[in-house]
Image 1 (cartoon, rainbow, N blue to C red):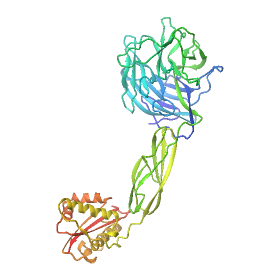
Image 2: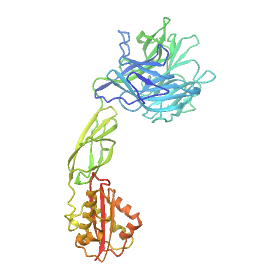
Image 3: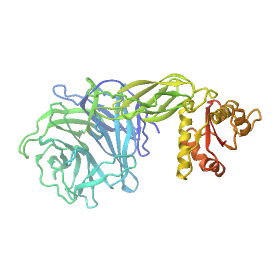
Image 4: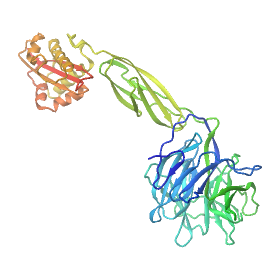
Length: 541
């Protein structure tokens, strides 16, 4: 799937993740306009700074055009994810009259807009004509309000909780069954100054003029819309379907209404007016009027976008926890970046870079070092606003102990000591005496593990032809009874013990009551076939 800087494909919807940017942003209300392409193949999305008096003209486009392919029924924008700036919602007509809902995050960069699909519902109600995002209930999250056309020509209002994932489901939570005929637009904003969303509905009067009315959202699926709170009863003619938008276009912390009209010369004009403060008894107050916005206009919406300015985003803080941070070869380290924090958002990407050039992503991982030295690990975290932070930690890896330099348990590697502990725990489960460590058996076991690792083989017979019993005797162990287990490829003591206990012959050796002493040897060779080599010698004198 892909998305380039000039194309957004729908229904058939193709998306891609935007590039990373370190530009600082402030939030500003913009006007998003969708136009029919000249060749009638799809639509074009354009973003402008709203026109305000005394200029009363449309400024140059803020970004490159975004081409939209697919049957778009309606367009809405609002803050859904909690990140700075708004997300876009596109409603599309699908097969057999059904509608699709697609929610995209939007990132501005280098004069272009980048879209990433956040969530969708590809089987929404049939015959949806208009949509808007609103704070329509008591929770802090955005809802989707839609108007669908019924078979009898009337309209129905439905409010949904938005889907939270791809191929999700929008859940209907409220609605009004019959809200009249001839509706041509739907939007939402804080029109009553009560810090909540009201619904703004444009509807044709019987004489062809248009009225705009403001309603409280319904609170249940069986609710009615009720009488309007505020209204403009006559805003003239020729307002286009989906040519209604509500936003704080003049940045005065109060929402205004934008309307698009079709003109006889084939162009379109834009009006921006203050919200009404009384019911039907006042004249509209325009802050921009009759602004020519070109040809082929199909839909508009208000769109809060991150524009160049002071940043409101706090960068994340990268944190690494490593366990262990030092030890002998081979050293397996658990690296955990999940304690990294972002005060005003969330971390969306973890990148680990190792001093051998290897890069791994994800919040945590296990990494095995097979060369000694001080190894630097770098963790970079990137938040939902593309701010980043990096931190480093040094892992100290020492040479493994000399396999021939052992005389007692003090010279055993940690892995060897752990295996001995696990073996004796298994014997105790079966009411058998624990085996004591004998230095000669340890020497024989370590010598054979080293031989297998250096010469890349696994066998009870050594590279020089020796048997387990000659190796024990050569180490000075005069046994009455003796045995040996070998293994390769197991990276931990627990893993090798599990392998032995699942093998009847090896299991019999470990649980043999005739044995009273043991030795264990482990060797590692990163360039060999199995890398990890284990030997267990058993005996009694």
